[in-house]
Amino acid sequence: LTTGASKNSCNADVPPIDFLLLKGDANAEAIEDEVREDLEAVGFTVNSRFLNKNDFNRDRAAGDFGLSFSETWGSPYDPHSYVSAWEAEDNANHRALVNMTVPASREELLRMIEDVLQEQDRNERRKKWKAIHEYYHRQAVMLPLWGRRIVAIINSRLTGYESGHQQFDFPVHRLVPVSGSDTVTISPGALTGRFETVGNLDPHTYNPNEFFSNNWVYEGLVSYGEGGQIVPSLAESWTVEDTPDGGSKYTFQLRANVLFHDGAPWNCQAAKLNLDHILAGALRTPVWHGWYGVPKYLKDWQCTDIDNDMELVMTTSVKYYPFLQELTFIRPLRFLSPNAFAEGPNSDPYTANSCERGWGTLESDDGTTVVCAGISNITGTGPFAYDSRVTSILTTGDFDETSVDDEVVFKRNDNYWGQPPGIATLKVVRYNSAQDIEAALLDGSLDVMWGDGVLPARAVTDIDDRDDTNLQVFYGDDIQNVLLLLNTGRPPLDDINVRKTIVHAIQKNRFIDKELGGYLDAVDNVFPRDMPYCDVDLTPRWDYDIEKAILLSCASDDDSSVSAVNAAENSNTLALGLGLGIPCFIMFVVAAMYVKKSRDLEAKLVTSNSAVQA
Image (cartoon, rainbow, N blue to C red):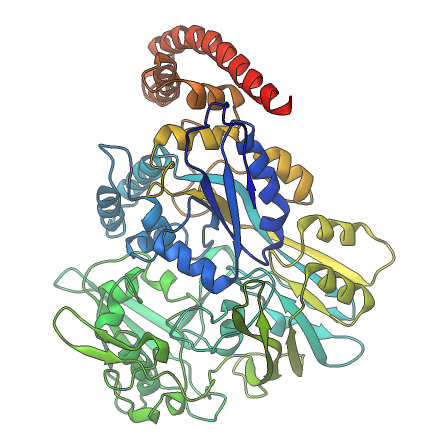
């Protein structure tokens, strides 16, 4: 879809902006036209491309986009793991940061991130995080839009709702049927927005595996609890000691009497086998698992209690403060039954690794190779066990074929070490549209919708406002922030004044109120303020200011008005550090230039747009 203003408008000679969107994301589909209209108002041409998940991920990984909706990862990933992942070459933010305005650089930012993650002094850590937030903020690469909330719509025949504590954490196992069948149907929020497939259900790899289903089947040593607590899971307890070489030693006492779904025992040998495969050779590099700290800094893992095989010792090369928090991640450090490795419990991590077969053979710089053999079975220790699926092939508008799951069935794990679920059979159902999901909820054929981007936000509030349904609507707290990513590696966004024009032209409050149901709030920072080290005030504010947008987009390259806008924005930062005297004087002088020039340029823009309408 392409729109644009007249060739006579201010940005007539600016290359079209490529706007990449995920097909099936209900909220993105609802506001795409609002963003285009805002950018058209200052003369930009926008080419919108809606792609399926695989193509969307491919283009983002290659940096083949100008604008794209993105989001932080929420707890327990924000901010440390989210920014660590910027090191990976296939990360969209890595691509977007490539042409930062000199003297800033992506390399310097990554160095600052690595430094703060090893900082042990809390006060110094806080200062360093603030410097990082200021560093990327001034580049106008990420426009914060709104806080994302996880919504659940649940038939009143079910009780026991509890909100999850991280993205895609849908604790369905806590729901209890109080009437009707103990078979429950669900339409969950997925990486695609609306559910399409659970993928291979492989705990050690990524797309197209879905977080929510992996979280039902597989577990880690610890889990992420309310308020950021690190909660025992497959480890019952642990201790931490300093090591002589500057690292840390973590000793985990593993939970006894736990069985995998296939009956295999959980013990230290099972844990070590998984770690041997996850952390083999090239898998520790940023392209694969090294996008976060544990694979980077974990240097040794051993079983030390020979008698009962229930003690695991993990040693890091440095003191890394988010270590335990990162062990709560849904992937890749979750545990698979030894019987489910490609060649069983004796599977070699280098010749028959559990990584997805499609990854092929991975070679390290030292010449060692890892052959990805995949897994032979879907078997974890979680509250639900995989049972079966019904698949079909969809043909897209451009005649590409994609495999989808029409229905995926999970069965209750009656031997679960915690409280076994009240639901005996859980069916994940795929629908073709948000309208179909809404209709199924209303007619009772669908019990649960859980997640963001499944229904348009306006549809959620419409259901909540109705008195004639047996549906309950639950709104979780803001868990992560939705952003607009501006790719500095793709013209015209390699020009910081173009990026500033875009961020000042977008009326996020308008489309949030109009399209997003009234329960989502605009945000000013990339990360939610209640994330660790993220409660900072950043200037300049990237908010709607049409006069600044006009000034930046319509002025010539050597026009002093552009410098005036930048000086005014920089003076806001200066004011925070020096008091208001001198900065206020600077802003007064700048304002006089700014008002006069903005009126002249606004008249110019209106005249050129009037010519279009005529």
